[in-house]
Image (cartoon, rainbow, N blue to C red):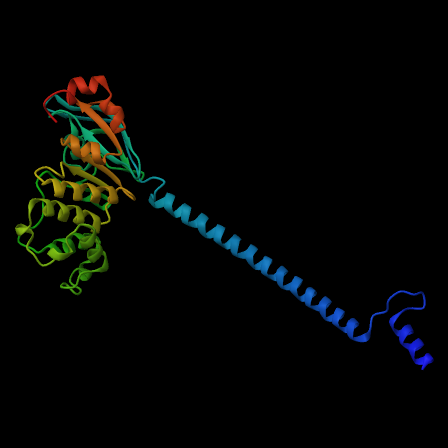
Amino acid sequence: MSERRNETAVNSEGRDGTSMISGEELEQLRRDVRRMRDEAERMRDEAAQMKAEIAEERDRLQTQLAALDDRGGQWSDYLEIRGLHVEFDGFVAVKNLDLTVMHGDLRFLIGPNGAGKTTIIDAITGLVPATGSATFRGEQLIGRKPNEIVHLGVGRTFQTASVVEELTVLQNLQIAEGFRKKPRELFAKPDKASQNVEYMMEVCNLKDDADKLAGTLPHGKKQWLEIGMLLVQDSHLLLLDEPVAGMTPAEREATGQLLKRCSRNRTVIIVEHDMDFMRQFADSVTVLNQGEILAEGSVEDIQNNEEVVRIYLGGGDQ
């Protein structure tokens, strides 16, 4: 009995008195070492995979950024006017004007009648001859034909909405959308609205008016339809000439909210005489007088500019 207890002691303690590891504990230790080695190998593999994915994502982003630069994404989605000059039989309507409107800006052009506001838009869209430079997305607009300028993503409205009154709201939008389509695509499912058109009808508060003739719409909704027609054409520079003229207060508010939404990912320029509308919705303001820029800045800057108050805001044209 005494000898067996001594053997157990030898198994549990070394001859020098240190603890001994049993066979079961040794096997468990080996399993733990193998598991840790496998875990370390798995982590190395995952790290290598993550590194490869990061490199792939970086390459993809660099390709996208290069593509944006090439075709004029947000990096060049801005209007830059330099030395714009317009004359009519010796009368200078716009005088060597410099103007930059950035992507995402809701810019208001204001000023007395004859200051050159609408003439600037006419020059940008190719409706009047002009000299100087006006570029959007890196493309020169001056000297091009109006239809070429539209294809460059520039759209405009007029003081009187230019919709086809004999056609429905849906048909007007489909025609506008078809501007960029191939001829055979124009007549595919003519009675079915595309997702793009459906979305724009919702954005422009026209979803319930899809089957109504455009000529039967109230004034405000005709303007919304015209804006919607620009949006389905994928216009990225919107030039709007007095879009809320003649609207009710409710229509004016809804139009302002629509234009705010449009300006989040577009460049929007509004010619306007409604100062209350300007104060409520403008991101920035350019004041024109006699074909030249009198002042630029925020609504607050403009309202506190003594020269602007004297020439324009202090008068009756508000």
